[in-house]
Length: 153
Image 1 (tube, rainbow, N blue to C red):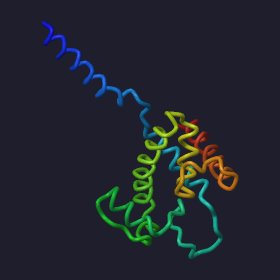
Image 2 (cartoon, rainbow, N blue to C red; image 1 turned 90 degrees about the vertical axis):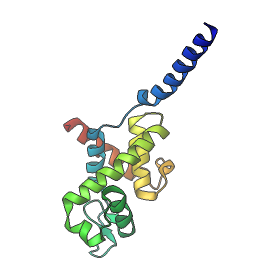
Image 3 (cartoon, rainbow, N blue to C red; image 1 turned 120 degrees about the horizontal axis):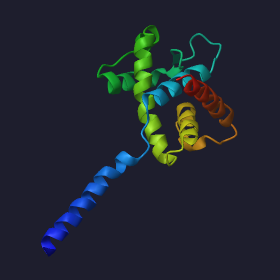
């Protein structure tokens, strides 16, 4: 009986550890879509035709081959990304979903903070900079657009 109790306790403990991540806040497609659209709406308008940024999201050209390969298994050039808005949006959804999941965890499942952190990462590569005075106006703008999009969805 003692062995059986030990096995049951160990089994429940293992089950508890296995179930624990499922209890964490999950990111919905509505949240991902809202952030993708918020990033598009907040994208900087440089006023330069050849600024090295592509699509409505103003993605750096150097990221496009890597991101497209990660998300689709096929590498795209910046010109292909620019010319195919549907494919660009699909890649953005893929990248933003991973980003938002990471930032949810980093923010202890706080949606507003996760969005601010995501916006900071998007602009600077460092999600911890979301309250930095140089980046805060942008992150707040993304959050505002995100909240508008969430209200629509």
